[in-house]
Each structure stands twice: as C-alpha cells, then as structure tokens.
Length: 265
Image (cartoon, rainbow, N blue to C red; front, side, top):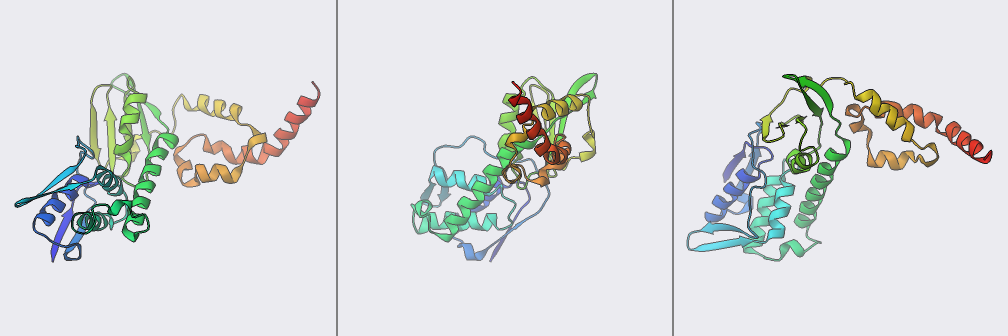
C-alpha cells in the first residue's frame, strides 16, 4: 500500500507527478491512499500542455487523451477529498483497460468526473458574476480589493478574465485559500490571505446602489429564478443585495404604479 500526500492547492501538478510515479511502478488504484493537506502552496494550475500528456514507464510510454487531461484539471479543483483517488482510478483504467473510457457516459467514475468538472466550471463562472471590488488607497494610488468565497479551488481559473477585463486597474482578489494581486503588469499569488484587508464599503458603493435600485424592474421580478442564479450564500459580499428584500416587498406596489402611470399616456 502506498500513501501519497498532496500539499498544494488545488494540487494538479503534484497529483500528476505522483500519478506518473505510480503508473511507472504499476501500482493499482486500490493500493494507493491519497491524502491532502490544506497548506496552500502556489500551484501553476495549467501551465503549457501539449495535446496529450506523456506518462513514462521503463520501456513504454502512455498517452492520455486531451479531453481526459482537461477533465482531470477541472476535477482536481473540486473540494471533494476523493478527487485525487477518482482521477487516478480513471487514469489507470484509461491506460490499462479502455483508452476510450471517457466516452462511456454511463460509467460511474466518468459520471462523477464530469459532475465534478461541471461544478468547478460553474463555480468559476460565479466568481466573475458575483465578485465586487471595493476601493482602498495604497501608496497614494487607487487599489481595488474583493473578498470572495468559492465553493471549490476555482480562483485560478478566472484570473485570465480579470487580467483582461481590468488590465489597467490595480486589484486584489482574496479567497479563503489564496489571493491574487495584480499591479497592471505582474500577477502575484499569496496563500492564506487576511480578509480584514477588505473594507466594509467605499466611496463608489453608494453610486452603485443608486444605479442598481434605478434599473430594478418590479414587473419582471421572479424571486425563485433570481435565487437559483444568485443563491443567498453569495449575498454577504455583494452590496446591492442589501436592497433586494425591500425591493421585492415593494415590487407589487411599484408595478401597479408603473401600469397606472402608463395608462395615463
């Protein structure tokens, strides 16, 4: 029995290196115990990969389909502690049982792998949708800071988006496991950041709240649909959500007023 401890977060590079070693030694999944710690060590999540990943074994090489490698990378960003074991089991089966395993959508391991990858992708999307920056002053310059709590280890997946969208803005995104700092030229990752660096409010927030209240359309309010897209667990870090309960309560009256005003014209 071989025990492997992954100390990095999310841990893809460490998992890949350990999996290469296990394959080289022909260690089957049932003989590997995967453990992980919460010590966040900066991890180059994706790096530069070829279309297939070559896994060496004395006198033999194994190639992993690009689609499988992509699934592993997303799945290992999942918070489920079984992710390393699942990915190695699928990898082993790809190499020794069926190179087309990923296409078997009724296989239990493949179903779980796709579900994990989908959850991570959805979680990464929510970072760009629900994250809100607040302005602070650093060295006489404006710096925008945000605290966000993803369900999975998905921050790195969206950093390219923020670097492109806010290229000329100095910003920091803090999560419970890692922070990303951008100074308009260099991206720096920091482990286990302090959430107290994020202010409770800023000078721009009042303008944003006024704008949000003005664009709210009471005639189109669909509470269940809104909650499915923006669950309440994200509300505490979104300033506009402080208005939602009152706006919903007033929506019927506001909608009737809109109809009444419209009928007069």
